[in-house]
Length: 145
Figure 1: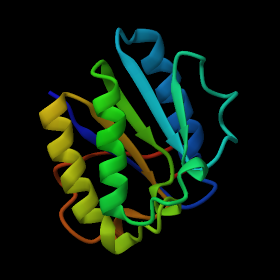
Figure 2 (figure 1 turned 90 degrees about the horizontal axis):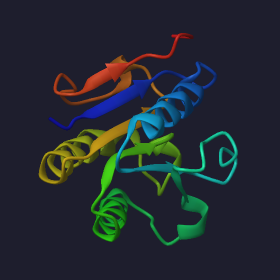
Figure 3 (figure 1 turned 30 degrees about the horizontal axis):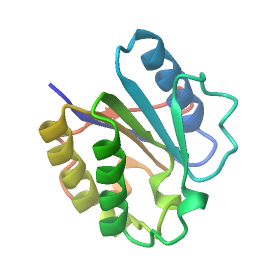
């Protein structure tokens, strides 16, 4: 069963390191593709070469959560072997705000179920700051939280 997992915490709590470690571990154990979506190229050398890194700075025309979801569908349609997509710091991508997160996560849940892909999404926020029901999501906290 595929799922959507959240890594939450404020800046400096170790979310990105946790994402990198999870992605690298997943790539070692995976028979399919792993995708890591990041704001820029900064993490490229921290991730194993088997992971496809997508830099959102290369796609500046994606400006809202609807376009972002469409972008994820494009990634999925180009590779039917994707097992997991890691999205680091979603609140820094495409003008996605905290108010967009509940609908964004609900849509990821549907995509996850339809395509058998796990999504791991990091958010620079505390759980209490998020609106909507997040009970359906696996919440991971970095050791610094």
